[in-house]
Amino acid sequence: MTIDTLKAAKKAIGAKQTVKSVERGQVEVVFLASDAENRVVQPIRELCSKKDIAVQETLTMQELGQACGIAVGAAAVAVLK
Image (cartoon, rainbow, N blue to C red):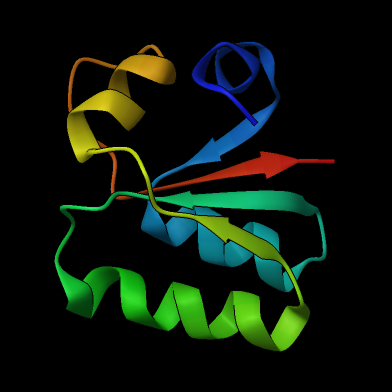
């Protein structure tokens, strides 16, 4: 999935919203910022592994924020089904 696809997709932005969406089974893929603090993204990474959800970690927090149309960085974004 590319940044352009992420911009157009329905998504949950932020670590807490991503976790909630994964737990509800609403997620296709999760993007984790490559420069986010490990204590923030590690629990999400583990949850996605348990739920068999793909995780991509190629974008920075700033790039994820821009792709989501927000003025701040985002540690995690979930693309919803």
